[in-house]
Length: 342
Ligand code: DP6
Image (cartoon, rainbow, N blue to C red; front, top):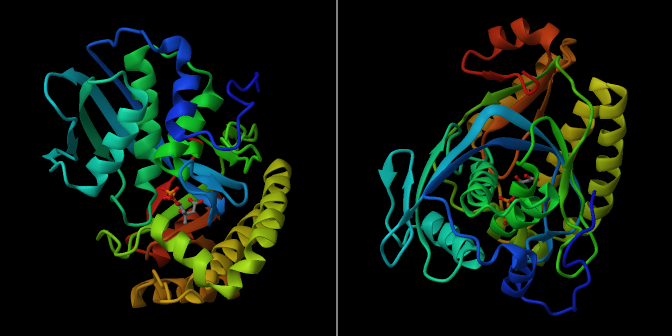
């Protein structure tokens, strides 16, 4: 990793000041008329759950994820005349009061020259806000497209930090394959960036079991804040997350599927336990989620090496190897198979 610009930070730097510093050299670049980019969605194997600082989206612990190849976000940008950014999501123009438009406009206003307004056309190939991390691919694609539009030519780690300002998990969505996001220590988050892991696992499969694609009532952001504030079980989480991250990273390096997948499932279940112990209690599962989880455990008890992980939503992500794909497909009719290293 190269030198991280803006690494020496006063303790109370604002997000805007940090952004201005990172984009200093590119400040007077003339934008291209249009630009586009794609970023894959990602599923954390060891989760990011809790922030040590909210305005920069700085995590309490590091995390590691697998990207979902062709499942993600395509974003097109063009310069427009007008007072506000205009956002289209999956073919539908969004109102300026929509929470997605507000978040996205705030990010754009931080990084663009004054008064530059954009038309943003976003197409998600994963259900939005159903726990399939579409905000991750959304902000990663927006970051990459803006880098292209503005000719920033920023190194990848700085793009990761800029994507993180939109949504923490977006810092991991700039790459395919396994990606590790470092917690970092600096107050301005310059060292809280992700990088891809070398290991390729062509036999790894991820199965998406969509229980519901409705927008969830409590966002991840709100959920993690509530958990930290009220859940006594959260106290043990940072240590476990750190240990799980190390175990999963080592298992990935060794190609040890069982250890990787078992630790990922244990990590997800432990994260959900911290949420259930929050007040008011936070349970993202639907009855159907639990039925599918029990089916996974039953199949595993019968000898199928099948594991699950879940994020802040009701949907399951199955982890298994290519040689068991036929068994998984016959057990779960609606499963959508992803080949992350395709
Ligand atoms: C459970 O990245 O959506 O999916 O940083 O507040 O935007 P914000 O949260 P977000 O949280 C993702 C939480 C998670 C776990 C993970 O992806 O690591």
